[in-house]
Length: 379
Image (tube, rainbow, N blue to C red; front, side, top):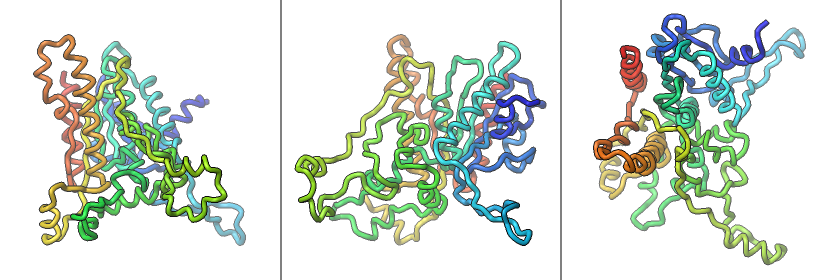
């Protein structure tokens, strides 16, 4: 009889090509774009480049953005099938599944000898959000088997940026701005908009967006926001919307009038006493369809380009935070003992890269991963 842990693992992940390689060859951990039932052995579920490598596919449970009703037999009259909506639990189930599967991988797929085995993580869309969280919290360079690098494609790395109170959603009051210019900064990517609209289904409550395992950016700074009562409401009720305050106690009125968001503050990550290190990261994103030439020229005349909340903005935000950590925390500490620290001046840009890939996401990811997996395998 299979153990309970083995049964849980079978539900969470599928292994490919493990028998074809040695236990010291790098392992690719793949997090699919959306949650789905684990297939039996269908290689079409893998990106083509992953089909050539030892790969563990983690099938986390999360609400599906494109969910459909599924038929279930029973409790139906005249022999018809009863139709029920497909159900998957919201946050934090997906990160629990991911960490449980990863723990099993490390415990059961480690090299049989005292050699090392590198893990590289690849995820897209919802899988990219989980991939970056897994990578940043499991990149221990001194451990024999741990995450060494990550490729994330079109991920959301700060879900609080979807809340109305986030500064990125506040229109400037500058007189130089007008309605047309505001339109120009709005993202037109339908897949990005789909994720935004699904936030209330992906997460059980607004406070879930503030979980740093969902929003990797929050490993590096505090949110700078109050938790709102719902996904589409402000946490601060404008005084003008309160028509009658006479029934409220005076101290409550004063509290309402003075309520404001906390200041966003930087956090030290990785913690100085931990063995974590920011690994090599490749953040890939698409860009919304190009604007008509007349509108594009108008945007180019603006002093500062703003792309609103988009896959590009999400990737660049996380990349800037990781680079800052490398420069301000890791290399600053290295300066205390390394006289040749100047040779590391470009380390942050080398280690953390962002690319707009259009429709070439798989080929760029494949080249990046192939370079590292082949390099390790040939050593």
